[in-house]
Amino acid sequence: MSAPATDRPAKSPEEVRELYDEQAPRFERFGWIEERLVGRYRERLFSRARGRTLDVACGTGPNFPHFPEGVALTAVDLSEGMLAAAERRTAELGLDADLRVADAEDLPFEDDSFDTVASALSTCTFPDPVAVLREMDRVCAPDGEILLFEHGRSDVAAVARLQDWLAPRHFRRMACRWNQEPTDLVAEAGLSVERVRRNVLGIFTSMVVAPSGD
Ligand SMILES: C[S@@+](CC[C@H](N)C(=O)[O-])C[C@H]1O[C@@H](n2cnc3c(N)ncnc32)[C@H](O)[C@@H]1O
Image 1 (cartoon, rainbow, N blue to C red):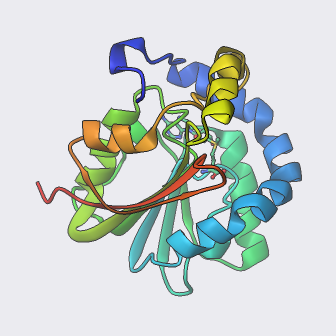
Image 2 (cartoon, rainbow, N blue to C red):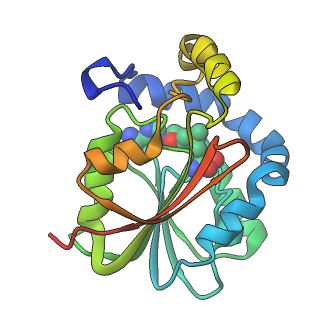
């Protein structure tokens, strides 16, 4: 069970932006290691994307190669450094994408603008993840899908205890709450998970979430 919202540690958007601007070269350089570990899970989930697709908190763009050809891709992130790396990735992949600096809590799009709203390894970092999930719901068309690939507290007790022990230090370094439970956040946002899959000792969770249609 995740900490209730009031106990959830959070850095301000400015602190998160600064931190990820600083970290961007490291993410760009060593992203291939993470792709080896979890690329297949990204592929399985994000190959479902269709039509107008929004990648929220896209980082350096590790989801981009996993979206099917022909989607109309828009991607946002708070960090200009991460987005600059994402732009280099779109060029390498020959993608025509609309990349914008934006706060996921206040997306610069009309209601129901996208058929697919995707996000990876991000709810752990958002200062208010529930507000962002509601914002994803707002911009997702009622017959669309919200696709989330997240990490959280392991299903294996010993690993979970180690994560709990290291969590404060990891949060200070990366603004990342790595022992929260992503399915709890989706429930807290009032959304329902249609499909869920756990991988790598239950640390990674892939979710297909139905928009509320409100
Ligand atoms: C751990 S990285 C994950 C990036 C990428 N989605 C991936 O799968 O590697 C978290 C990202 O969330 C972004 N981020 C954090 N808070 C944000 C917010 N409020 N709005 C937009 N992006 C945000 C950070 O700048 C960073 O790029």
